[in-house]
Image (tube, rainbow, N blue to C red):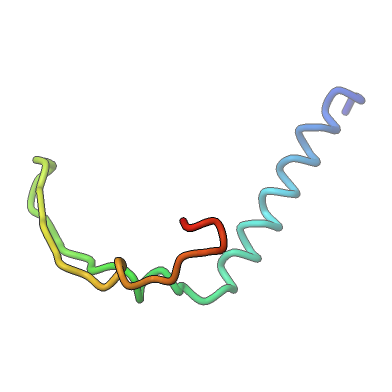
Length: 62
């Protein structure tokens, strides 16, 4: 091992640590999406009416 290997080893250790931490967190995104199985890779267009337009605006009006 040389000093040039340190950034690689550190990056791999950080990556493993982050992946483990992400795996422990609840998957809250599943509440916001609908997973639909598709049989091929052709583009699929879907339209859905939602309540996102009812979200409150912040102080800047956004």
